[in-house]
Image 1 (tube, one colour):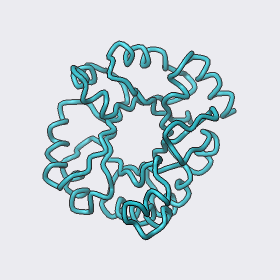
Image 2 (cartoon, helix red, strand yellow):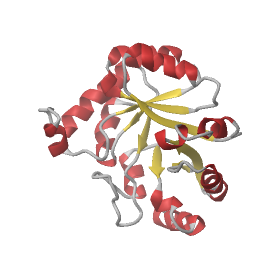
Image 3 (cartoon, one colour):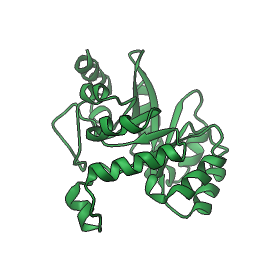
Image 4 (cartoon, one colour):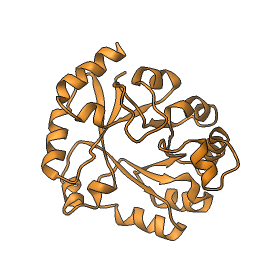
Length: 222
């Protein structure tokens, strides 16, 4: 079975997005493409995605709003061939269930706690529970709402797997020593060993020579 990688298309340039897609084809990996708020909110970004064919599309919108707004947004996106879409689990059970009700063929991935946050950050916004405790509660909520996937930091994969038997998507993956703006990171090999199904990779693969970066990733995993 091929290792599964979502390539983060972190740009607003259609030319760069097209180049990244063309250069990231690999026989060794199952590849999907993650488009975030930057690209989807750019001029003609939505139109670009609508024209992609035979690609696994991951719309990383991280929806976090009242139930009606979230479900209405899913419906508004139905003309795009989206395979995965993220929502914040902290939106609450009612919102998650409303989203699932209208999602159709779109797999809804619940985001636990962003990899840019640690226990100190969580305390600063009023959380009294630890990161681990919060992620467990969020995972149980995702299971209760029958979400299709959970997005969590690499250090939480083992914890999430105890309570969730569907797909786990993991950002914060590094084959270099650079952590950028994420605080909870891990190597690809370790994340897969923890039990992750999909890894999300951006700058470590897309910056510089993409073919060489993929070779480095293959060597790392073999």
